[in-house]
Image (cartoon, rainbow, N blue to C red; front, side):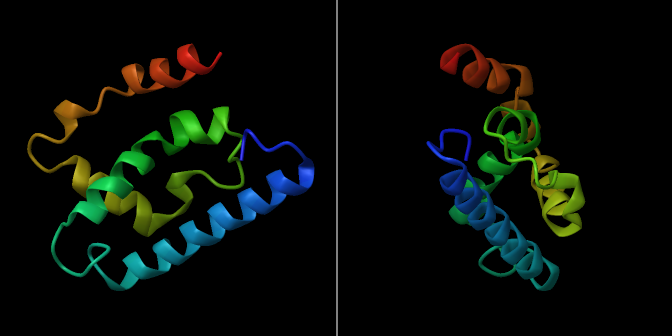
Amino acid sequence: CGFAQSQEAYDGAVNELFSTLDEIEDHLGRNRYLCGERLTLADVCLFTTLIRFDPVYNILFKCTKKKLVEYPNLYGYLREIYQIPGVAATCDISAIMDGYYKTLF
């Protein structure tokens, strides 16, 4: 979204992103995880994106239509995975932000 070369490209990317988040929000309203009731690699991959969404993507890439907290199922899913023993220790939000803000600009 943030690297779009035109307003039309940005609008299309934002609409696609948030449409996908809406679909995942709906899915997580019916399922604990992406592939059912067990944590899989798909969940780990989504988690790494979601943990960056508000502090990085929302601001830096101008994905500002909604914040993650406005998606109750996605936000709960993020919190649940974050609370799995050992996961929080791997999530240094300051380092994540530095990796984007200091590298790209």
